[in-house]
Image 1 (cartoon, one colour):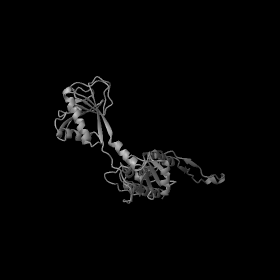
Image 2 (tube, helix red, strand yellow; image 1 turned 45 degrees about the vertical axis):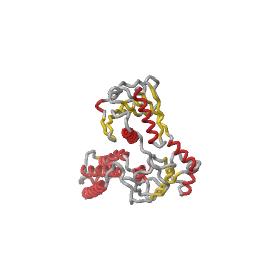
Image 3 (spheres, one colour; image 1 turned 90 degrees about the vertical axis):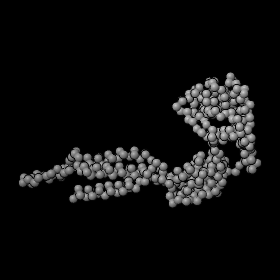
Image 4 (cartoon, one colour; image 1 turned 30 degrees about the vertical axis):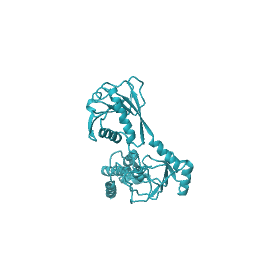
Length: 360
């Protein structure tokens, strides 16, 4: 369990202990010597409980001391994890056991691999003890823009692809032959321009992406498309949905669920573009399509891939990252807790002084 946790504030009921202690004080009854007392049998002195608040400053100091202690525990990070093997979901179990044994981590704790493992390790590195060893086993690790500086030694091992280089090349060919389904609803005078545009897109992509264009007239069943080109100044039929729509500006206000106040105007690659979100998908509207020249087609292609497609992650090679920091980074959302330690020390000294003065 980590000490940097709000659950430590559940210990606040311990403040009842000093209150209960002060309320449980007892005093002896005062005995006055009498001349005739020598004729009475001896009796031990009696004690009685006094239910009243005594030593209020001392009680307040002790309560503040406990509050400062709980706050300090809630803000201090106490590492508790030891040697750990982080295993990807698609990694073969036999290969993972073999690699863990080679690294001397057969009995180490195993954890599922995070999606962005290196940034995740930098964020959560305070959970591991200083002498902990970390082993990352995955088929592929995305390379960040800059390798993080960690306080622990992290070894990254990549699982071999089944079938070797041939399968890896086949995977690349499959990725290169990805197909983007496109539905085009346009008037007869624009159909040839849209077909030529997507054919140019196929050529510009060098075979990495192929566009499967389906020409519709708007009366068919809802298509399964990643892009719908609705080149009509009329609202699209009900049930048609796609992640991205290309519309003429006249059709943008007619699309269901579009808030006119939420329409943003952009100028990307020297192309004016109106962008809005709707329950049916994201809508793009422009007067510049279908493009009439090569520059317009290039601008539309670059804008589409820059704004709509996620960038591909470059794989990281198997390597060992040496420790480059004396200690992990501070936890996100926390501030240095040095002042709490000084406050705790000051309250402890004041409590001891007041206790000593009361006894004198």
